[in-house]
Image 1: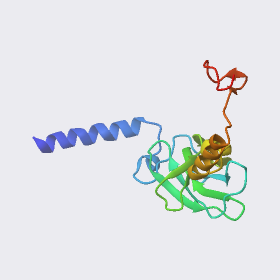
Image 2: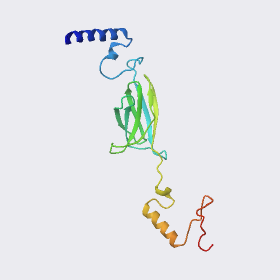
Image 3: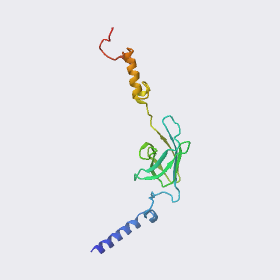
Image 4: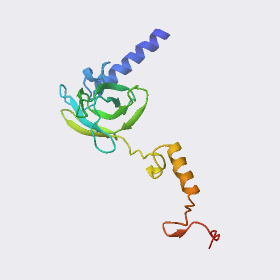
Length: 175
């Protein structure tokens, strides 16, 4: 009985393969090839990694992820100008990710990049803006901010308004 079922399944699969327009080479296991893609023409993605001030990120690890399957396809390290390139890519959808030096955290990523046979696509990886604590108005660290605030209170400096609006409805001392 099991042998008969296997024979029937084999016949059905053979008939389905023969009826489809996909070449047998594309149906075989291995690297996935999109239907309609020209054989032998690979795509590439090249780009630059920069920080929030547009300064190049030298020696930064980047990786290429297949957006369809979620797997990492390739990794690279940027040069001194922040440039990177991924070559010999199958046509498809990809995401380029900027990694922390420890390779355990994604710091930034591109939107989904679609590439076709023989196409070369440019990508920009940019770190998001990082503001210092408290916007730098009271220093760049919490101890500095506390020291500045304490000194202002000791000198009798009080906030009376923020952007033109009263800070409080209570009368201030001496008014």
